Image 1 (cartoon, helix red, strand yellow):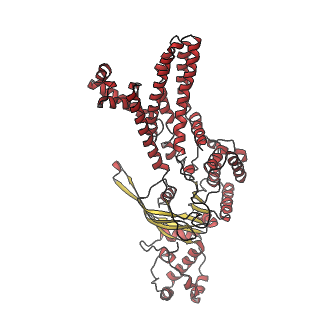
Image 2: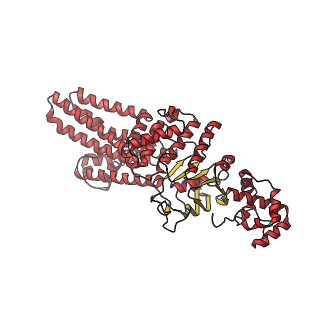
Length: 555
């Protein structure tokens, strides 16, 4: 998989960051010119060697923070929480730097051999080693900034640190003191700070090299910690209890975001979310905008950390199967995929991430393209596709490799009727295979067509949920009681509950099967039309009475 991440990063650099690539090529060409066509080859190495570090910083811009911010990396990290994504990105740029210095080394040898100046090769070699050391240090610092700064802002941050340090040292008179008195080669606070932010002052003295490598390792580990906090977190807690029909149980999830100046304002996104997802079922996740749907999904995927609560999962091993981990396929809203990849490349990348061989990944890509009628687009880059076609590609990315659990966040966004029909049929086919699917959508008729159960969330709380047919019956009973208080009193006596004046959400959380034995109630229900999911949604969300929210114990 490391090779795939290396190739992914190089494709992004050369297909997207082409301005930075041109700058690197120009600098490399200028350096080669001095080596090959001037009388002093070492001049090119000494003048331009350390520039490759700054250019590597420029190349790394957009490789980490931007991908998390745009959520392009999410469909990959949702499948497998692999550290190879970080190390592949880091190595991809660093290997370009090493490759540049290796090319300079070869060209230097050729030039010196032709010019009969081989005696100065040790000086050139020393310059190349120094340049590689400084470049590696620069890149480690720049990559750290790339983990929390957008685009080329990491390059600007590195330059700002360096310029600020030089200005302060010149203003204080420390620069002349360090450079002329020789204090730079001794260990003292001023030299340590100067070397940390002005790498050009680093020499090949043993403690300079050790100090530079130590700081490089610190920056690298800090970068990995940031990357891990963004995408390698796992909020799922495996359970080894008795066999059951559940795949996930969410218990008292709470999440508060801080907003406004100095993040002083608090916004509670989740206020104790509790529900379960049954294995092999298609569950709809409904709620108005801002209800907490996306926050819940991103906590399940591990992209957000809850303030409290936990998510228990029961893998196939715990339910009597063979797999001991949960493989999640994720289709996000707006199909945020790598735009510079082709359809074939993104399919093969995800399949390889799932552990398939390159040959198997190629076969799966062709199968998925055929299933989604994407054969003609296989070699087209994603950025050139229409919105509906990109949605189909995003669906294929989620499904390829047959994950245990699928999460679809607004899969019907921007689809025309024909593509919507194709997507619906594929979702129904996946349901027929027994794959667990969790689907969030605002298109209630589509939810009713494909889902077996629904969960309704509003203002960060689960307010209603269960099998759709049972909720429809609960809605009919609610309407019957609302129009006939005497019936409500009678039914309340049967189950020992006061039903009059209660909200629909309250009734939906009760076991009302025994009430259906009442002949009068059955006759009353025959006069009440069966509701659709939209009516249930409106009654549950819009007309909710407030705190009377009960979820049945088996939900």
